[in-house]
Image (cartoon, rainbow, N blue to C red; front, top):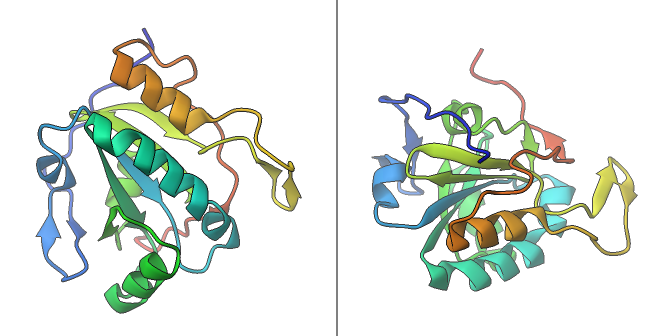
Length: 177
């Protein structure tokens, strides 16, 4: 079985769009899995994935999977995030991760990148699909749907075939240092 280790994080601080500190794992209590989709208002690759993110959301939210959009850039204000989420039709709740604490916990280094947790165990992190081969190199259509495949496995209670994949996108700058 492919599972990552349980990660200790007693002081994780992320914020909702009203600048309230929240624990996203408590907010997702009772979910079969929690998906964190790291995105950015100014990343063209993230923005191109909006329709696929919504498709995956519509397919798995009814199956007990909780989704959050996570904005790790501290320059992304709540108002800018609201406008971004609305303009791209996102239905998932948005979180701000200005110190990249959640990004580090999820091993996210670029946007877009996905992380799936079951409870507090990281079971998948990586790309949404294989549409982008490299920066500037895009397939006409993806051939592998990594996030959807991983969620299908989680919902079925079977091991994820590929629990880590390499995402292609805009780098998450380490503003916390």
